[in-house]
Length: 122
Image 1 (tube, rainbow, N blue to C red):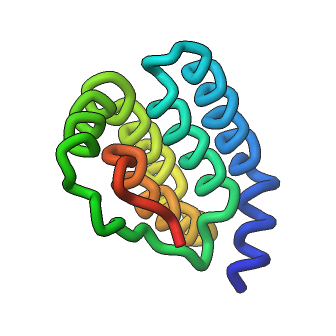
Image 2 (image 1 turned 90 degrees about the vertical axis):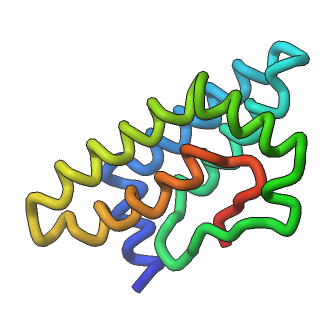
């Protein structure tokens, strides 16, 4: 079932969303300071390509010193906007019964979009 959900997800916007994350991440990686943030954006893009059948998992060093500093910077600069975009998409999709599984995937991506350092989608 997750394979079919991922195919429908990709057709109806998941591919463009993931591609946007990856292109944005590559642009952020052009600066040396932005490389860690660009890599997280690319990771989020690949997670956006196929979210069905996966869950957000914290790594063992999720709340380490450097990860915490990067997460604070991420939330201030990018994270809150990305999380609000996922929330807005989830609200719109939740209006119909057919859109509920897709809304659930957007809700699942919110924690990873808000605080990506030390989290992964497995």
